[in-house]
Length: 120
Image (cartoon, rainbow, N blue to C red; front, side, top):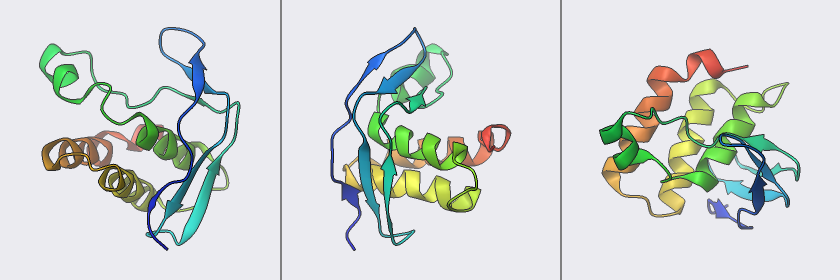
């Protein structure tokens, strides 16, 4: 199985922070050997990049598709994978969308270091 998105991100902002999918987002994960289907109606806050000017300039609005998959894996219960796997799928998805090494590596490190409190 090749990793990659089978659909594009479609939705609407419901407030300044949250975005609601108006159509399902489908992603093939080679790492998990499964197709992930984020349902229409799922609400995401995308990547929680701190609003510090330099950090937001470098990483804000850089990985919306990938962040939806990551949020879905973090919030779905029972969990479809471990937290480490979810973080690695985030990186895998960024690779599939050809994100640069610096953005991909830094954003992955950010979720590894700061994502524990969001793992539900």
